[in-house]
Length: 114
Image (cartoon, rainbow, N blue to C red; front, side):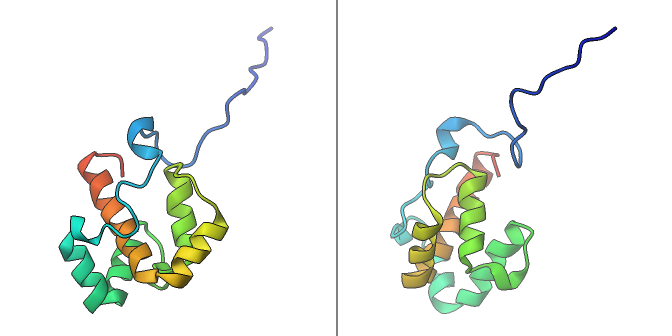
């Protein structure tokens, strides 16, 4: 008779990513100059950038600027923070929030971990 297997580690959401690049944001909240094209898109066509972010994450275009989107992204890559901090960032600087997520997505694509 076979012994039953016991699950000691629960499966995680998404694919496995290296701990070095997944534990922090790839750029800071105010690092707009690190990718001027994203900054310009956010400044002059904010809805377009929000839809790009939502599309990158396979979510509804209307969700690109939401607290839920930022929280989903942050938890997917084990980035420290809280829903409260996500709320504050998206409330007081939504353009910086969406630009940061888009820069992070681009960097993670370059590292092949997105």
